Image (tube, rainbow, N blue to C red; front, side, top):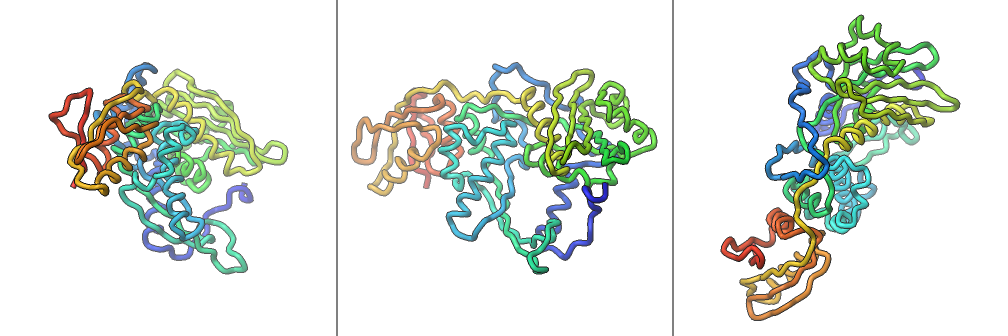
Amino acid sequence: MAAAFPPPRALRPMPRFRSVFMPLVLALALSPLAHAQDLAPAEAEAEAAAPSEPFDAAEAPRDLTLYQAEVELISQGASERRAAAARALSQVLVKLTGDPLAAGNPVVRRALASAETFVSDSRASETSSDQEGNTAVGGVPVYKTTMNFAFDPGSVDALVAGAGLRVWGSPRPRPILWLAIDDGRGARLVNSQQLNVVKPLAQRGLQRGLRFGMPAGSAVEQAAAQTVWAQNPEPMRALTARYGVDVQLLGRVYRAGGGWTADWVLSRGDQELSRWSFSDPSPQRAIASGADGAADAIARRDAVLIDAGEPGQLLVELVGLRDGSDYARAVGYLQTLAVVRALHIVEASPERVQLRLDLAVGPEGFARFVASGDTLQADPLAPEDAPRYQLKP
């Protein structure tokens, strides 16, 4: 087991942001269940709504960490930073929707071209490759730069609605991870003192918007290693319930052929939510597969639609346009909106233009999308079927 899962080694000093941020992220992703109060009780989890039930994003509590992502920069150019913002927004959309294919949605693809307009904050940090557990080139560390993005929740929620995607709301369950590993010397249960072993699963869980709890590793729990290995959730429920939750992920990882295989079963109470297996030459990737399967299963159960109205055409009026610059700014902004499929000028006069918009959402969804931006503001006295907008100062 030592060869596949090496013990953590001493690290060189990191830049301040990285040295504080990374341990904190891992601690949040995998909470040792010896501190059961750190975990949200299962009773506080949101019950799944009917698949057709609309979801009002404005009324839902927000977990702001779901709107944040970290990506590596390939170069320092402006085009790469734009591409990095698109990759980060794709990550955020996967976390928010629970759909690993969210970035392929046609409306989302349009929005990714202007992903920087969704960014509320960003910062760069630098670290050397050997601090990430990799081998430096010729004994010299290879430095890489990562960008940490925070996206505006209102704008991203509007994009999810406009794309017709489901949203995986908060609070989310935090499954207890019961993981047994056999590297040829018998199955052994991983506990909260061995976080380095399950770090790949923790990191992948963060990318999917899901955190896990780890058992403390008591003698009673260690004795249950064979039950975990047998993939039998029912006898583990009593141990899981000791930590105040009822969602558990049982996994077993073992050598198979020239690589590793991971078998998983996710359950809530007496209900089995999903079973899956994954094989890979890398034991780390095999372990990480538990996060993807768990996120997929929970999101299928809990994700609901945001009510964005029926797609169609809408007449809108832009007023207070003083010159060509104002006109270009207002109309250009509408042309960049991912939910605007086409735009036609109906009538134009000094300081005013009327447009017919072909929308991927209804009037409510369009209004929400515009309200989340910083370009146009609605006239509250305009009729609902003919909204009127003017440029923000």
